[in-house]
Amino acid sequence: MYNKNPHGFGLLSPVSPEGKGKYAGKPIVILGGSSSVGQNGKVVFFLAIPTGTPFSNVNFPAIQLAKLSGFSPIITTASLSHAEALKSLGATHVIDRSVSASTLASEVSNITQNAPIKYAVDSISAAATQQAAYDLLAPGGQLATFLAVAAKTTDEKSIIPVLGIARLPANVELLETLYHDNLERLLQEGAIKVSTRSQLWLFVHANWVTFSQTGLKYCRTALREYLMG
Image (tube, rainbow, N blue to C red; front, side, top):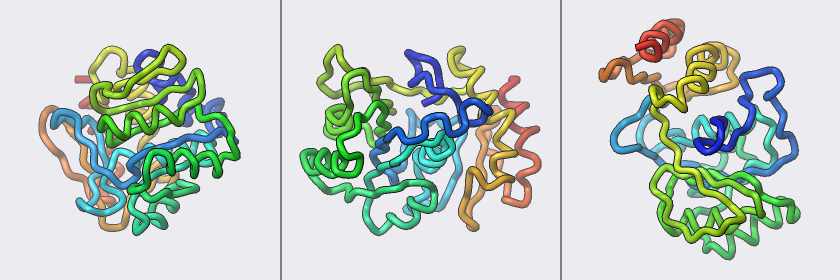
C-alpha cells in the first residue's frame, strides 16, 4: 500500500509521524482476511502463525497497518468464525466470504453509506475476487493484488500487482524504513500484534531463521543483515 506508484498506492507510511492516522475516515476493503498468500514460494517477511488460524495470512499485517493509517471503516471478507479475531487486529466489519459479488457490493455500500472506495487489497487474487474488488472501487481507485491481473479493467481505475521482494530496487527504501527501522518498535508497542503461540520467521540469506517472542530483540540485527545483503 505504501510504495510509490506504480508499485503501490503511494500512501504515506504509518510509521512516519505525518503518515500515522493520515487516512482517518477513509474506507478500505481487504478481501480474504483469513487467507494464506504466497508469491511463487518466496516470502521476504511474514509472521508465521499456525496454518488454518485467522492470523495465517498476508492481511494479518495489512489490516493492522490500515488501522495505523487511520482507515475507517476497515472492511474484510472471511469465514464469520474468524470475525472476532480479525476485529481484534483492526477490522471494523467482517463480511461472509461466501456472499455473491452483488451482495458484497451492497453490504459495503451500506457500511460506508455510499462513500467512495479508493483503496482495496485482494489477498486471494483469483479472477472472481479481483473483479469483485475492482467493481467496488470509485473512479480513481486502486486495487492491490498478489497475482497477475485477471479482472476486466477500464482507464478509470487501476490494479497494482504487488511483489514483496525486499531487494527489488523499487522496494528497498520502503521495506528498510518499515521493517528494518521500525518493526521491532511496532512489535514492542503492540501496534503490530502476534498471537501468544506464534513465532516470528524471517527469510535471511535463503535460510529460515526462527525467533520466539522472547527473541524479538534480535529482529533488528537479522533484518539489517538481510536488507544490507
